[in-house]
Image: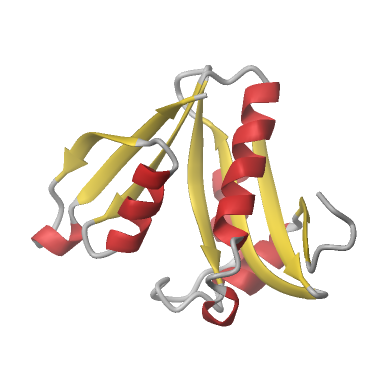
Length: 149
């Protein structure tokens, strides 16, 4: 990444993930460090943070799924005031580049019907809808999207 760019990506600490997570309006409820520790411990994972002009602006974290060759892009988001600057795309590109370099052959994520922007983001990035899990009302149905690397 260009060192003169206002955007820098680097590996994140759990505390940084939590700090950004708490500032993403779409994430309801209170998260905790144990939310991330419990999910990531004993897993081959990558946690990235985006820093825009020195401020934590977004994050993306994922790990090896039950299928060894498939990477699960578990959580991510960009703070509202930093959206529209290509941060989500940069995080996704870096995550996919890293996953491919580690030998993963595909990546997948889950979203919900209530997040059409995330569905569109996936489609623009070459993901396909591969499964649907009804849960709660139709707005909460889980949509699974996958992409070959």
